[in-house]
Image 1 (cartoon, rainbow, N blue to C red):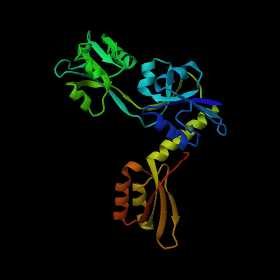
Image 2 (spheres, rainbow, N blue to C red):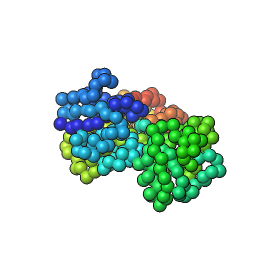
Image 3 (tube, one colour):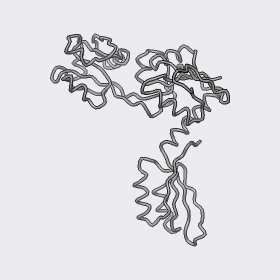
Image 4 (cartoon, rainbow, N blue to C red):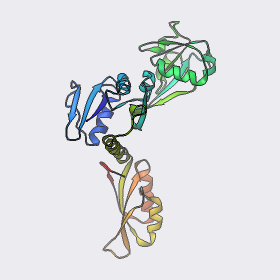
Length: 281
């Protein structure tokens, strides 16, 4: 029986539940439920604080868990990323009053306020910088004005909150984070884990592609296939209408409409895009 940790709340929670549901796993019925058993798939899910998940997985009490890359690093737990899941994106940056600090190197000997001391500590170590880290539970933007710190390190989205606090980002991003599936460092992959990974990868592919179907004259097929090469190659079938063929191909969702426009200009007709619910490649 696989034991898997899922964030119980916050920005990672619904995305984690959605991807497991799309992969065919039963999830909890109520947000008050702390566990959910999927007996058919031999998996038990535990709904935990996102910041604690890496610690539980590293202890060996749980086999796998979904958490943020930032949370895993911040915990200091010995876990490794198994799969990047494509949601829960965030970027960590340094910030200070304009002109006060203009580079990461200038942080040497200064005080840095953050809610993620583990993330900042790792970044400073990688740069060979020694600085004092001030751990705060939140609202780190106020730390400089209150005299607690010289700079801050925090999640930056639009930068609006920083501007309101009279701060500006500087230097390269500390980290680009997103939801990741983690396991204890050094653990091998059991058959049950391999099956789960196949399912999750199938969901990620299904989210990124659509099935594109269209009819095109046979003499234009090679040009059409250049536009829709598919994952391996498209499926081509003869039509009752002489000189025409039907084509089906998995096509990247992000460029879908440009491809459809190009096919139409080429002479293809009956161009239809269909969502993919799941796949195995």
